[in-house]
Length: 215
Image (cartoon, rainbow, N blue to C red):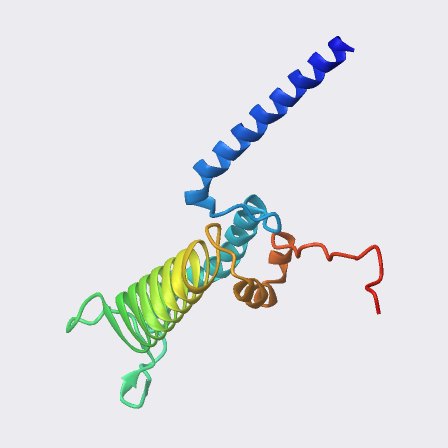
């Protein structure tokens, strides 16, 4: 009996040490991952978010880098066209403002237009290393809908994002779904937009009473 009692006490001490170590590790990770949330898988969330961002950004960047070169090639054979006084395609090759593309589609080091793309893009739809527009996609983006490595907008999606609705690795705003915060409203909103995120954001198990409440 004494031996069993000693074994139980030893086991209890080991459990207490493991709980203390687990609590210490959680406290160290909390600044990066936020408070512990049993309904959220941070590793799966980071993987899914990175994959979705890659699917969004890759076609946009291929279009952004390919259009200026393709446009410059096409302009050799097709006469210039303009809409409302703006050239249909401004590639930044003019002598007046070299590197600055101004047009309905503006592409260049600085692209300005309804669709602006380049090192810096500005327009209704803006694509570039830096982008400002209604819809902005880029390394750093600012717009109503902003997507990029750093995104600021009404809806911000990126590696780091700030906005009323933010989806990111690190996010700030009113409704945030990120490693550091998981607001219920943001979970519902972004899981509708990206259903695959449901794999990382689960719901708590319902509590089923064992006895019926007294009538």
